Length: 496
Ligand code: BES
Ligand code: MN
Ligand code: ZN
Image (cartoon, rainbow, N blue to C red; front, side, top):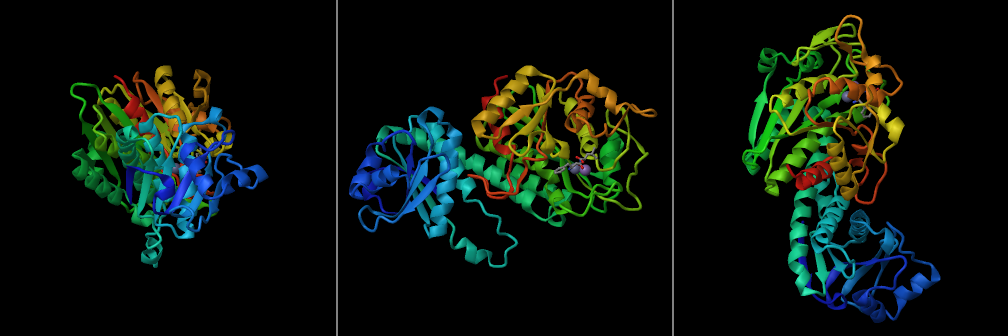
């Protein structure tokens, strides 16, 4: 799909579908008012009668029938001006675009008129909202080609002000890069687990590395054993799929210290010997969402040429039951030297992360951010509207929090007080891998905190936000690609 920015008059602009963005508490802007006039005042009457309210997410489709050059016209609500955010704009674009596609539009034109926001940010938000809202995962549909015929080919941002074009274009380019990265993550997460093994993820990482000039290293079982990654190998021991420890480095930051991003990459979590119930086990293909987010963020950082040094670490394995699987009662020796008693083989994420976090420390990083579908408890605590955030460093948490607000991938902090460590004390090892039902998000993070030494660290629990069971404004149901935009924003704003 192409996204263009041009100047022109909306009423004369030929397009399959035009989008008018309207505030709830304002009269249409100049260009929109001209459209209304051409339509004989229809929009004004619809609003007056209450048939259309420009609430956030509201979309109403009209057929101008020759009175303006557009075949179809979608009115899209932005809510009240005072509450306006870039995320609302993203949502409006993300809602309107699929409505026009469903009606048959293959090229869409969005009128940029009187939004009152920075033009670059405006361009980015519309590109992201449009692309992410139009996303579909069709790879496994035998009539994919037929479905693809309905794809939107082109989105045009139309402005009446020539002086804004340059900034809008720059924003569009940024938005395209970030949306593509998020869609890559969605594709990876949506793929069936047997087709998205650690080996396949490693080769995808290789492909991205080739494309964007990253340095890639993939550690095999033998090398992991030599280093002493006993936790990752313990989890991998039940699977016939070889585990991979994937290291992606992006180096455009001169002598700056590395930013370490660590992503949980369990390509399928059956629970292992502590096997999960059958219901919803299929969803456990999403247990590599953290790894996908890290790959997506590094892809964006490289494409946007951010002046940073970043290392992405993806401990990748299946968690399977078998005769060779690790068992409850086992004690694993981690890369850091600390030992973990296994009470439940389904608490595997924290195990593979313990080795990856210890590995991250070897970079002497400026910060470590890990992202993981770690606990079902996170969904109990926060529902699907926020990612759980825990960490050791206030300024870092603040930065992540701000990135969450900007991107709409919001995070919410949970406490990580010393007292919680009591729950993961083991009688025979340095710690145990579960801390009981109470405060499950926190005790998981408490375990992780033992592997980050003194480095500023934040943990993001995306167990409930990596997948959505319902359509959201620019997130169709399925894999959300969460974390890509959040981490990319964090990196873009990062000042060392
Ligand atoms: N991958 C799961 C967490 C998860 C649950 C992700 C639901 C997405 C949706 C994780 O490995 C897990 O199984 N956690 C256990 C931990 C427990 C055994 C302490 C959980 O949350 O039940
Ligand atoms: Mn598990
Ligand atoms: Zn898991």
